[in-house]
Amino acid sequence: MQILDGQLVSKATKDELRIQVAQVVAEGKKTPHLAAVLVGNNGASETYVGAKVKACNEIGFKSTLVRLEADISENKLLEVIEGLNSDPDVDGILVQLPLPAHISDEKVINTILPAKDVDGFHPVNVGKMVQGLDSFVAATPHGIMLLLEHYKIDTKGKNAVVIGRSNIVGRPMSILLSQPGNPGNCTVTITHSHTRNLKELCQQADIIVAALGKPEFLTADMVKEGAVVIDVGITRVPDTSKKSGFALKGDVAYGEVAPRCSFITPVPGGVGPMTIAALMKNTFKACQAKW
Image: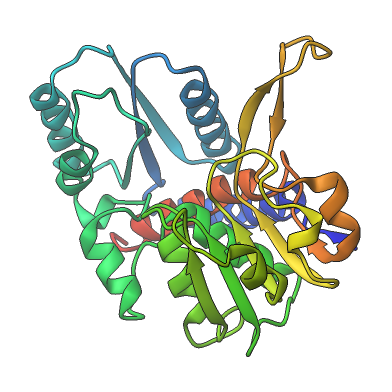
């Protein structure tokens, strides 16, 4: 069993970007600039945005953090986004999800210019990805593909099961795994809460991507010997033995599943750091289009 170390690969990706940024800045070209919008004070969102801003600083990007109150109106938020759209110095825009209930995720995502949509959520970018055209790919699936590529995992002709059908992870992941190339060329089954024979499907899978948000859902009896398991989930579970009062759990029961795997991602330290690395790559790409 080998651990797919997202921390290691993310660092390598960021180191490469840092060298590229230093080079282009020395040539007098524009410094990539990421603008993050944080609505309210959700603890997890604060952590995620903080990590993204930190990554920008490490690489040499400019970053702007726009903090807004949780009760901001939808129209006001859309005005903020429009302002970032029209700012020529801003290359990438991300609005941290989830948003308060009174704000439509769809309206917010659709308002971001596709050319600045470094989260890869805009329908234009999703449509291009489906057609295999150049686009911004959603950061988490993109990060997983980078991880598979780094470890040279052979995916050609393999059976892959994706658990979860969200627009952010499950659906784009299924498309990327099925597209030509390596990683890619998989035969993909996308599963969800209404899938009747989920256990049997997982038992036949060479690759399993667990992205449903249920702690330790994937157990050893669902995984065949030698499978590659990618754990996208991260949930805070109460744990009185921890100083924080909680433990972070993935969607995979790691302790019992890991011994059966050829490769597996840990939680934390697996997919999470790769999501940030992919976001940074998308931001650099957005800036490149202006040179």
